[in-house]
Image (cartoon, rainbow, N blue to C red; front, side):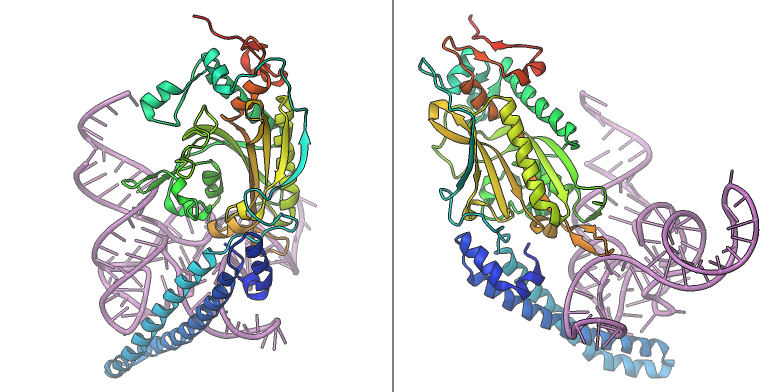
Length: 422
RNA sequence: GGAGACGUCGCAUAGUCCGGUCGAGUGCACCACCCUGCUAAGGUGGAGUCCCCGUAAGGGGACCAGGGGUUCAAAUCCCCUCGUCUCCGCCA
């Protein structure tokens, strides 16, 4: 949620942000108007209520024979109070609706435009070349008997898979490597619930434009989370957290569920885009003044992971129109996938500034002793999808795959994944 | 699945039957000051969150799990939801 004070005092800033996102700046005027209506309604209700409270004290103190007469007088006042209260409720829900249409205020320097208008910040590593025809990750995965799409479809449908044998171990190895690095950087591991209540899903901002992406269990009124970010953000909801010793950092380990409703026909081969996968997610609660620095740190830890795994990648500054409502800036790290001749997203890190925290009511105590919303940031540290880039990048002509050194410790020292012959 | 109890200001509790004197007492913890003097005690005072008006000082309102209702008036009465706990049954 946008800061209502900012909305009142600097609507032009928010309009500019809406334009960068390619969204209507008229929403800003509507929200400002709704705010004025809301505040007028509150003032009216409160003065009536004050009158009623004072009257109530008189009634309480009055002698018995005067009570009946006073009570009769108060009835009219009570009706007006009820009426005014009704108008406050209406004005507040109008305001909420108006404000919810506004995305977070984009940080200076974020490129304007949509999906294709990102800026490449840097490219790291050499694009691998092969003196043979490289196989795609699924072909390799099948040679290694590591990925089974057919049985995934038989059991659960399209976009489901089994990771088998070395495939299963490879996923755990990547996740564990991420976890060890998170621990070294001071993160507290959390294995999170993957079913959450509507207000948590709403608070993290996922029920807006992307609500069709989310699995919902109507009988239980619970949502399946597409990332542990949801549970990690909800973890401290309605709390005043202590940031006096620096940021609170959590590494959330969970299975993620996504309907992929808008992507029929895209990435249908292999495990690039699946309904269910695992992910290790970094999540930070920080003082808003420290948010941009923390964003750089999260990005740095992501890059260290990719570098350790010998992957070639680029970092992009995602354009305003492709941020989602909560993020004020987002960096994606995309790894080179040889058989696609393209960079594909492996990690994403978002700075949500105080937007998410405001909706979830997460605050900290400032030096002056006042409370203020915290900033929240999140970023991927490892996911199932990384298997794609690792298999393809480190493959050899015979279908075997060299295990990056940093990963060997997590695979019992294994140096090469060999095709399974049967 | 069946039966019941409970949810109050950081923590622990009082208040709820009998609605107004309760935005709410007490203990512990906390902060300031005083006293005393040595591994602690005593005294006085202060302190919650959110919102509205105001440059400010200040004023007003809301909040007793959440929502709705009854009433001139609700922590207190009624209904619903959520959560916690206990017992029984059932399954791991």
